[in-house]
Picture (cartoon, rainbow, N blue to C red):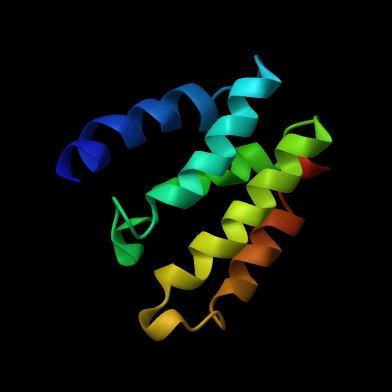
Length: 104
């Protein structure tokens, strides 16, 4: 788990979240699905916050199936970030996504 947080997440952030190109939709689709499996199995829910920029980027991909899978993953991951699984704090995240420049 430590290597995931110190190596994999920064790599994905650099190559997915900070990249404006939609390189390979099939890879992005697989990634969007696999991120859901990482929490809480590999990454404890409260430590999964660094996944949010990656998921935000995937939610803004032009390809519909990638966006749908990323939203599905976001719906699974965000409640795990809240103590006790409370999703009330997910509203600000929804506002962030709704006002994202990438989604405009």
